[in-house]
Length: 128
Image (cartoon, rainbow, N blue to C red):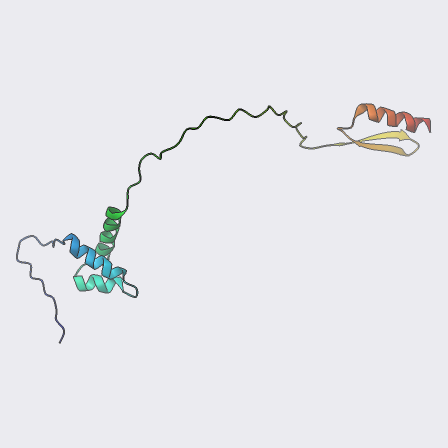
C-alpha cells in the first residue's frame, strides 16, 4: 500500500509557504535525468510553472555576479608607425577610348593611358 501525503489547510490564508529547502528538493528532483517535470509538480500539488519559476529564482541566486569593471594594465605606448603614403585611388570604372586613324585602322586604349606614351605610339603609326 502506498503512503499518500495529505495537507489540510486550516487557516484563512489559502496560500502555502515553501521553505528554501523544499523548493531546492523539488527543483533538484525535476532536474533528474528521465524525470517528467509535470509528475514532480503534480506530486507536490503545485503547477508546473511554479516549479520553473523556483528553478529560475534559485539559479539566479547561485549565479556569481560579475564585477562591474575588469582590471586592466596600462603600458607605455609604442612609437607611431612611419607615415605611409595612401595608395592611389582606383577608379571605379575604367573606360575604353577608340581612336580612328583612317584606312580602317583603330587604336583602343584605357582612359588611364599615359598620354606621353600614347603620343609616341601615334607618331610611329602615322609614319608607316
